[in-house]
Length: 388
Image 1: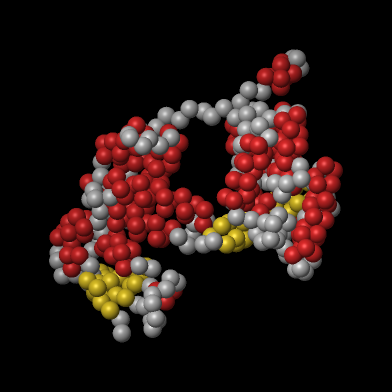
Image 2: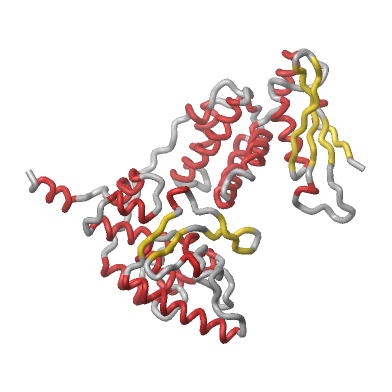
């Protein structure tokens, strides 16, 4: 039988819709329903919000009750009461729950981490009373407090709060966006390493003979992101092309295939002769590994890069192993993303068109490529002036 749990201050009701007979599990059967009523054309209409937990349900109910509000009070009383109940924490909880289904897993995890910081610093504040000064004090404390965050991380906090408050403005819970009006932290431009072919060869030589070698070569020679590499299937590798169609994400202790980062991330990348040799040798190594493990040969829908047990890689474990090997070789322990950056850096420095490099790397716009790889194009500027 459904259990009814009253929300604070008579704000509707949150009902336990768990239909199981055993311990509560996650998923659709674990839903809580928040019920409330509104006046539509003079008639009272029942509406509902749904959540995975009671706390989420209460937060969503409080958010839904906003200025259109609850039961028998006058519209003005209803609006004042709902607004006083709706805290920054309640709104962020409801906003984050709504984002879960429409946001990529990795992005949602990042949002969740940032929202915890926001709730700890601003959560008790009534949402309509949040001011620009509140936000700026919070950001300053995060950047200059006992455990300071980087300017970029503080900027991410402001960006998530700004996005959440944009939705609050749209729903009529607040009149203006305090995070939008707050001054962002100053971020110094990060000087990126200008990679050379000699740098690339030194790193690959250090990784030769390890299971980091083929993924590193794929990043260096094809510019793939780590998730794109770990999402590659053998059917995605033709003799002359890599078809980037998936990205691997690590979710609840296992690897899953998801859509790439953006529409432009779905792309075909030509395989250079050097990379063709590396991938052919890697295929032989994978077949030998499977034979040792007593499992079937490589199939078209198997992952290209796998762990020593022929399972999909945990990206964190893979990155830590890479760092250990580079430190042992006396090299800077960079991640796979640095090798992808080397791909773009070497191509641009050797005269490749920025548009072409942008398409190869799957950037969402040519501006990203230009800003990242042409900050100091001294040689090209000299050559351009000689054309006059």
